[in-house]
Structures are given as structure tokens and as C-alpha cells.
Image (cartoon, rainbow, N blue to C red):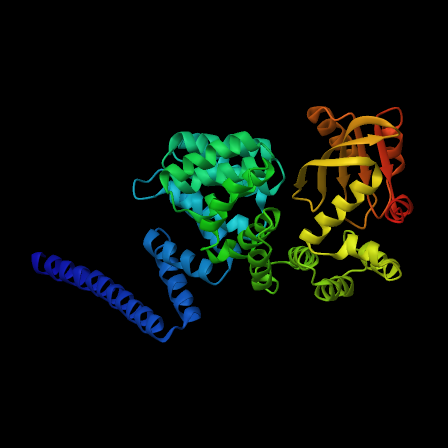
Length: 447
């Protein structure tokens, strides 16, 4: 009897030992096939092998995660989401499970499939479960920003910054968000904090430059754009601003070189290129290179039939062909234009003494003078507008405020175009005289 028991026990161990050995050998065979598939780059065979391994052991987390990553690499997010949900359903709570990583991958896969609502729920869950992590706050901020909810996005980014105040990427994103929300003081303060973390960050310099331009601080903006232009991403737009600032300060030759260097820059979109061409045309006009300005205006109109005052400029040029004086007023270099303005001022009244001549950044010229007008000694402030468009109420109102600041007793606005109805209504009852093309020609005809 004992011998029979020994034989049965031996056969029992032999049978199950054989099964275990076969299982080990099959597993080794599958792993060997995985190595070969990996070397040959055969992803589908690798997926099939992983699926066989998982059928034999559904709780093999390492294999399932490797399979998920392959699905993500292949943009097969649907399968990846299914396997990630399987892990959360059947293995949640196990110590070897990195629940944060699983949820992170699950949210990112949903984003790739444009399931933004589902992704938002997962990020909200992570934010609640891991309140000290910036990742869910940043991702929720991105989603809200994408949906146009800038206020809510700002709250998430602010929370992330409070958790990691030295993380320049998060601080920078908050600053840019505030800039896009037109909260310029807060944006400037935040971007300056980012600059304190990394003084050479080109993106931060670019947005600070933009804010300085809004604040009408071109000199400060210029220094920031000089630094942001060294980054390819911001080179085109930074150089454009540099060119505009150089033109404002009458550094026309430098401005021309800058605009010419970026007019075909690949990073500029259609509207930016049109603006560069327009600004370059203004530089040519200010330098007296009329034919080059005309060529650019015509090029602009070949792209779009209506851009700013380009069509008016061309029409006005055609009209001024018959009048050398009007053409000089419109098209002459700045120095010659200033001399022409002085000549007009002398012809406007009697005994004119020019006290101060001030070229403006918008190409206009202001002259403060003493004169005798209608037999009355007085002080006159002249404003010579140079452009093809009608002068609106805002420009006249701004000039009137300056008139009061300088304590001039009389103001005269002159243009070769005309003034809007609102501008003329504003001038009524005030010590303002608005002179268009006809009145200008009449003054110039005086001896």
C-alpha cells in the first residue's frame, strides 16, 4: 500500500511539474518572441504577444502597461483607454498600482480623442485627491483657456503658481493668460516675476515688450524686443516692433533695413506681412522714395482690395499729380515736409514768429507760433496732418487738449484730405479752425 502511495505522489508531482515547466517554457518563448519583434520593429506581433500573455495572466500589470504605451504610440487611444479602465476597475487599491499615472494617461488619451469633458472630470478628480500637485491645476487651466473661460483658467494657474512659485513655465503661462485677458498691470507684474527666475527667457521679454508698447513706453519695449528677437519663435514679430519703434524715433534708414529683412519672414502670417509692407511703405514715403512706396501699396492691394488707407493713398497720389504742392505735402521726405509746414504757417497769418516746431511720431507736425491774425496779436498752435484718411474727432480732440496745455489762444488743423462730420461738430464754438485740401491750396496761393 505504501509503495502505491509513493508511486501516486511521484506521478502527481511529475504531472504538475510538467505543466509548470511547459508554462515557464511558453512564457520564455513569448518573451523571446517579444524581443525579436522589438528588434524587428514589428509592433502588431508585439501587441498580439502581449495579448496572449494577458489572457494567461490578466493581472500582469507590467505587461498591460507596456501594451498601453504601444497603443498610445500608435495613436490607438480607444484601446489604451479600455486597458487603463480595466486596471482601475480590477486592480484599484493594490500597492503596486500608480493610480496617479493611470489617471494621468487616461486623461491625456481622452484629450487626444477630443473627450474634453471626460478629461476635465479626471483632472478635477486628481486635483481633489492630490491637492499639492500642480499638474491637474495646469491642465484644468489649459482646458478652461481653450474654452475661452479666461477668468477660471486664471484661478487654476494662480493655484499652480502658489504651489510652485519658482516654476517659470507655470508663472509664464499665468502672465501670458493675464496679458490675453487684457489685465496688463497684473500681467506685467507676473511676467517680471518670471524674469526674476530666468532673466534670459525670450518669451517673457516678448510679452513684456508688448505691454510696454500698450503703455506707450517704446524705449523700454525696444530693449525687451532686442532680447526676444534672438529666439526663432519670436524673431519676426520682435523685429517688426523694433522697426516700428525706430520709425517713431525717425531712424528711418535703420527701420527700413529691419522691415526689409522680415517682409518675407516665414513666421509672419498674412496680416502681419501686410502690416510690415505698410510700415515699410511709410518709411519709403518719409524718405522721399515715392516710387518704392507706390510699388508696396500696389502690392498690398494685390493681396487684399481694402487695407487701412492704402487705396486712399493711391487715389490721393493720382489727385496730387496735377499739383506739385499737394504732392510735396503728401510725399516729400520729413525734413522737406517740415519746411513746407513752416511756409504754410507764415502764409496763414501776418508777422508770424515760429517759436517751436515739433515733428510727431505719427508723421504729423506741430508748430507753436506768435502772429497777428485778423489784426489781433495772438498765439497760434498749428497741427499739420499727413495722410490719406479723413481726420476724426479723436485726433482733433487730442489736439485741442494740447492747445489748452500750451495756453495757445488759437488752434489750426490742416490736412490734404478732410475732417469727419464729428470732428467739425466738435470744433464748433471752440477756438479751432479745420482746413482741408481746398483751404490749404488757397493759403499756398497767397503771395
